[in-house]
Image 1: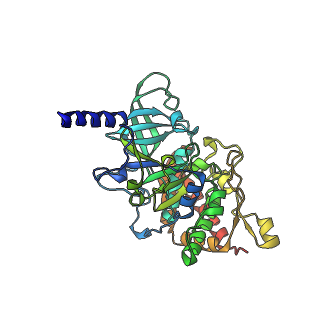
Image 2: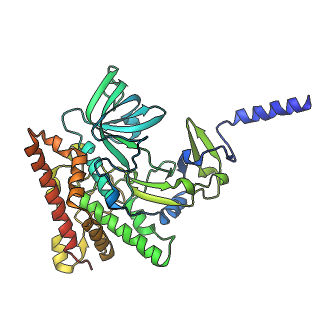
Image 3: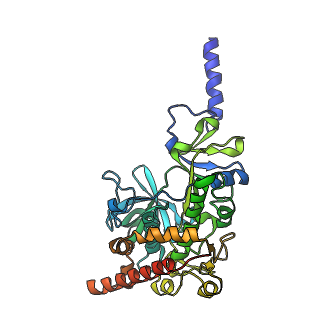
Length: 404
């Protein structure tokens, strides 16, 4: 009888705190943890100081159009139609780009879409920007260009309003969730470029630190190359590697299908290995501006008009000052950044490894030619030729400078 009462008391206690598991057991799959709330700003900066930015890649084994991390069992084919079930209005996901959350089986994905008027430049720029980062060895979102049939979609899926029906979007992208757990503060997402400039690589020493800082300088320059001007903190992600999560040191909070770690309840670190990257890069291949809308993203004339460096400054002092205007909302975004020679040379070396087909495939994958509604293949190829030529011109600008 005593044993029965003890069991009831134990069960009652467990039910009363079903959302709070103090010590994860072996049956918890740590790779299912997708979010870590950092204990403080200082803790977040500690994680940022050890973060990797670059891992390199074997270009010979890549299918640029197909994209990264594809497999036979888990693959989004280029420009093919996929059916998903509407799950959440885009407005709930943050930002102002037309999007929504959609479910395929047990998995949920972020879908960005164009209404057919070619006004959403992020369905083109998101693919082109992430393919470029990936080809050059930097971490990036896994984004795939598809057609999507949305079951039970509101007329306005971004706001979640209007008549419910099955709707098809011929120009859309679908994004897989990043590997590992995203590290954030309770009310602040991501990291700023100033935070990375001040703290990045500081946990390392000697040649490891020098190499890490070179990767950072190269990433700064690549941001200029892509004209990534929408540099609010939420546009950059800090992630904990799946194998780096120290779940046994802290509480796991069950949230629907996910486990989350909340460090504000703890005094210890819960991640040993981190990486960081530019997250929302849909605004690339245009021209950075103080006020930027998705219609201005991936616009050929805008991108072609921007030089990589401030040439007047370079002629005067040989200082490589990046030519980048950033959004008014990008606090700590570091517009017109100064680039060190180590970063310039490293990025130039990586760009030189790209074949002309690699470069062309970036723009084929983005489907940017469709935005101009070409009448035939000749017109389509002419559009692609223009993008490739300008890409090569900008590569040459980087290669021909030497920074003080």
